Amino acid sequence: MSTTKKVLRMGPVALVVRRRVIAVHAGVALAIVAVAIVTLTLGRLGIPLPELPAALLGGAEGKVAFVLERWRGPRLVTAVFAGGLLGMSGALFQAVTRNPLGSPDVIGLGAGAGAGAATASLFLPGFPSAVAAVGGAGIATLAVFGATGRGFASPARTIIAGIAVSALAFSITQYVVSAKLRDAATHLAEYLTGSLNSANDLDIIVSATGAALLIPAGLAIGRAVSLLELGDDAAAGLGVDPQRTRTRAVILSVLASGVAVAATGPVAFVALTAPQITKRLTGTAGVGIVGSALTGAFILSAADLAAQQAPIVSGLPVGVLTMGVGGLYLGYLLVQEHREGQL
Image (cartoon, rainbow, N blue to C red):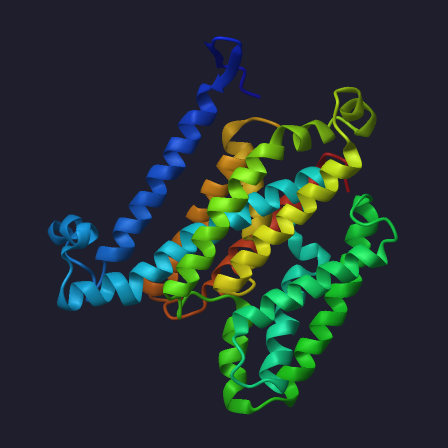
């Protein structure tokens, strides 16, 4: 684990700065910028690179304006903000459950979102899928909260209840998909997988507002959540209320994931993989809110770039790509946990 660090002092305030962490954050941020440039410029409809700066500063017209404002721009910005929210969500959830294989999906949020969207499409045609998905995610979360008997205080009970709620929600979704209008089922299936194909200005507003509000909130409780990894007794001895902190972190994680679902649909595995990749890159313990958010933003934007341009997977919903890559990474984590005797 890296120990290279520097202490910056400003009067009574001392801030520990780890050089490796800063380097990783800067590197991932530059990677996101590179993905953004390639996304906007690559291909037949791409904006010529010399014209990109002027277009971004408000000088876009004709085809350039269409690509930037209606086609690639909205899905890029939505991917960055939604990916950041998913990364932070996973970091908080894994910290409070002390489980590197944990993510908000395990408490049924993604499955609940899918069931909400599917049910609305059957009984309320024309009702916005995003609103129905958030409602379904909220109902699933409340079901888990009530089923444990202790709210989110017990990580083990939370995960077990989440598995049960996920199974119930998935059965509802499958019923709707099999019973529903065959033509509309294709569109519904795309949304349930997670997609940026129809991203618009509303998705940008939802994801950007969520990121602006929730990521700072995550940073505010990050230190307290990190102390939970020492154990409840040690955390309490350092002035942290374990149950209250854990509940706040889970609620914040669910809210962040729910906002992302509203914008993109239930994209799988970003919340799972982003925090683990961040920890391995930075070599640090604790909750890496900023790093996980940046990594999540990179994963989702890079996956969407592949969904737009890579020959074999072009046109697929972005959730299919994250599911494939995330599944491989999940297998890697399972092997590592088994070797370390944690499974």
